[in-house]
Amino acid sequence: MARKTSSGWFATIYLLSCVLLAGTILPITDFLSPYRSSLVARDAIARFVPSGQLLYQYRINFYGIDFYNKIRTPVVEDFGELADGIIKMPEMEMKKYFFAVQGFHEKVEQENEIYCITQFPEKLKQLKARHAHVDVLWENGAFYLLHIRNKTKD
Image 1: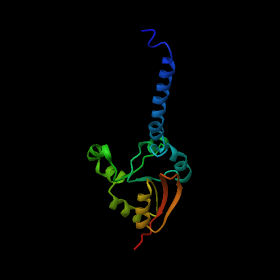
Image 2: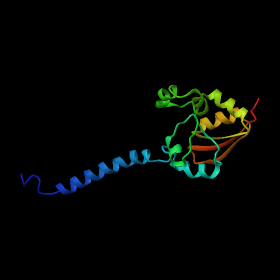
Image 3: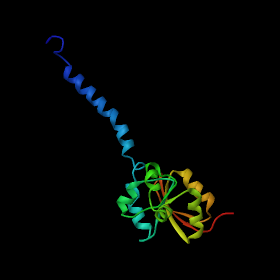
Image 4: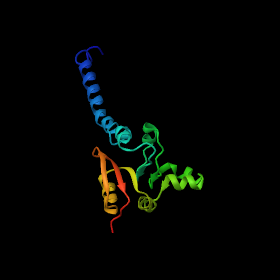
């Protein structure tokens, strides 16, 4: 037995371990990328959104925004696992914090200004197509922090 494993076994185990660890780097970096966490938007939200102003999450739902910035954010359409709890909420609170897309656009038309965060360029294009005054306050290629004024396109 000693004769079969006498040379090179340590180098083989070492190289196999290195290959295994190197193979996990890409999945780990994808999981930890800024596109999966709202932590990257924390400072921008604190800088651009005035105190006391609601920040709407347009077709996304990141719990980290509430956690990192200590603000409650209304959610537009992407309720996910919150749907069961939303049904049980008082109606006034539900109408204030959870919107369908059409209800959100109606809210924009009623208010002077709205601050909103969304993810992905497609959703930004949807908002720009619907509203004439959409200013991008901050973006990092994935998240877009927006200031929307109430004038709509015809």
